[in-house]
Length: 436
Image (cartoon, rainbow, N blue to C red; front, side, top):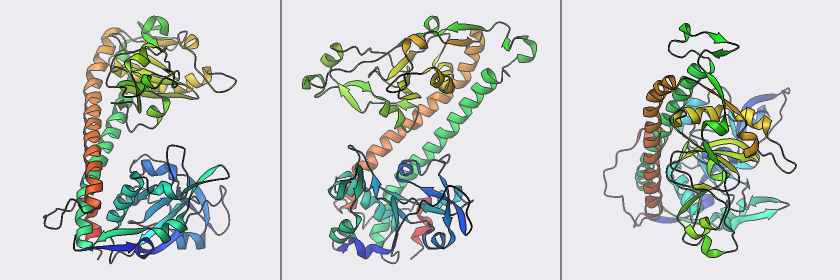
């Protein structure tokens, strides 16, 4: 580590500016801009992300318009389980997908622009990620009038980092970026496959342009041979339960997958390998939770209605779910799409004084339009390989993320040396490697 030096965080920066929120309506002397919030950080590489559009004064756009290589820093937000101080890196690919409007960060964020003659943006971004994971950012997180805020001024003044010379920074960043680019490529493949699978379902069972549709009579909007079946007679479904948190042995060392709605809404894909928390077998046996098999369709039914996920191992849930078990007439591919696209209908049927809820009593009375079994079999023959490919890419990403996260603290601290390695820079870093 002879080429590593201690550097004050403030010395890294060529520029640091806070964000803007602007106005919701058109105004003279303002430009329509896309604005990045802290809540958008996790989905920055999603090609389908929709950022808020706001009208920002021209002079502020000129001063604060974001560029490739800028690092965004979260100043407020946070939760009891998630400290403020998260960061995001803006790569060239992001701007290629967002060319229509100038891009700024929101008022509860700020952007950091580095002195690139000495510091590589990718390396500093990964360094900030390592600090956040280690809990360092939480030291500067304070609760202020009901909102968690990050003490950026204190952080900037007090933080001193071990940083290698620029060539080593680039090698470390290239190693970690290679993993991230593989992950992002897989995410793009998953998005395309999901879109294709849903489009096939819509074509066959929403637009009713299924194979041979031109030879089938449609009576009152329903093709001949199709029927409406109440869900209680269509497939098995179950609710959930929660082992009491007052008995520690119901949770300590548990390995029973026990899903909550946050596992579904925070997921990066339709398949879920493991729940955020696990209960013990004893805890499960002493609760109203019900075990269901792998490849069931979990539907959130409280507060957030209609989020959907597929478990990859036997599991149970808390009370916020109705979980549906596929069968021969309603295979996973068909059932998943029907449940996903029925979300608006489920929301209409939900009620409750405290929060919205779709009860099992209401759910079982819903009717599902059921095509002939042979048509569903043909559909499943098309869809099953797509679902398997999505699952494969998600499993790959799980392993890539785990490996990257193991390497991150060792590389970023210099414990794992890269100085003597001949490292090929991934495509996403080629531009930045020639900047200096």
